[in-house]
Image (cartoon, rainbow over all chains, first blue to last red):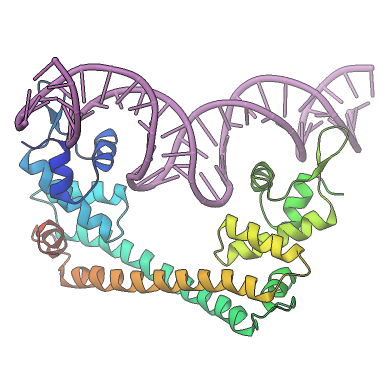
Length: 131
Length: 131
DNA sequence: CTTGACCCTCCTGTTGCTGGAGGCCTCAAA
DNA sequence: TTTGAGGCCTCCAGCAACAGGAGGGTCAAG
């Protein structure tokens, strides 16, 4: 049994984050007599699981799903794969969007002399109604 | 003079968004006698400017800076270039992060058979303490 | 017995809006 | 002239995913 500070340390997250996860019912520890949170080994495993999933960009709600699949020993791997696949698509879409963005900004950025004179293609680009 | 609905239409943003921009002091229209917002031509130009800058991923605060530079006819283009350059770096960093993310998720995703059996490398990967 | 490190709950703030409630204002049709 | 449909107004709540702080209880060491 760990109290919240130790569980935070062990899982690499902040105390505030663990409070939050309890509040939203993601990982709800038991309580000691004095009211302190008591995290079990299992709780800490879950926290580590979540920590890694969050690090991979899964939303907290996706973590909740993954966690319930993690705990369901009879679940099909297809269910998990579906969630991961969807997330993968989202990430790929985001990358493409950002790449397009980069090109546009880079373009404006490159065209700007960046000197003390007021003429600036970036500003002009943003002000023009084309695009 | 346009009222808020027309200004929203003209700038391609929602009425709520214009309310918000007024609240944060970004574009503050005058008022008509009846209390309705009265957007001038200049206001609408600014809104269009902001709309495009936001579309390029500039934060609202960056928009505020760009806008003040936009209005300052004597500003140096270097000032604008600096903001754009910083944003460019952020975007590039984000792209790299997402690419790394994609590889990791793709890896797990590819390894998972995605059938009805419970064994799943994705879950295993998230549950293992390595990485 | 006191000090300092924990722990607790509750509230606010973050970013950039969106949606809704409750209530005027305005214009055109009946 | 009334009535109905829009629009407009302000204020409040909420989204994600926490962080920070106030104000207070608890615990172990010196």
